[in-house]
Length: 202
Image (cartoon, rainbow, N blue to C red; front, side, top):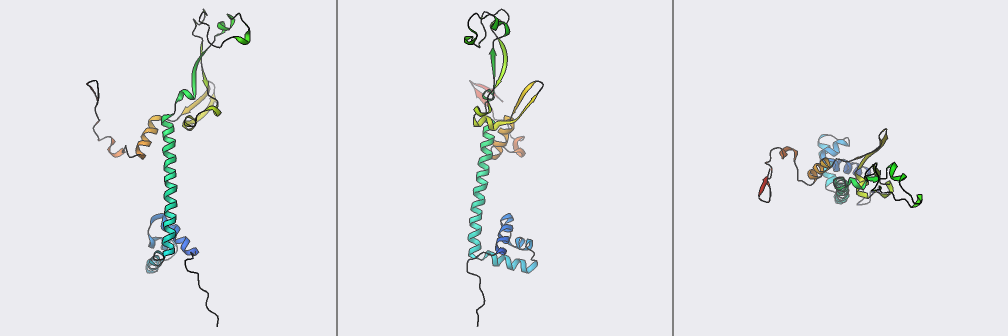
């Protein structure tokens, strides 16, 4: 007489996998069973059966650890991005420079190759101030912090426009994550006075 086939101990079936997927969403065993198509007493009974299994408990603990690690990694990424937006230095993205004006170039008597780019201090046209322009840093040369803070780059009639993240918004969102700011209480709190050299600033 043949023995009936039995499932090896400790093996997770497809029903177990489905139950754990629903259960990890809200932590309610009966609700997870109802989402599997069970109802009433059967859903409650099956939930107790699933949760009493040591194999299911071990797998749920393992998956919770993975989910916590993923959430922590995601939180660290958000904090890093907001910190970069807050600390980004706009002068590393674009620099205001003073170059020779047209008359500075004309007043040079030496070789063209050796002519300096700085304005001529004796130029009568610009009075040594030169021509003011804006130079952008090459994308490959941008530091990681400033690269992260760039929201958009566009080109129009007025030239190239680089938009950086709003520092105030980044500071507010970062403070919320770190528990330093609460929308519901921010307007109710009294401002903290600041003293400098005996002078009080509200």
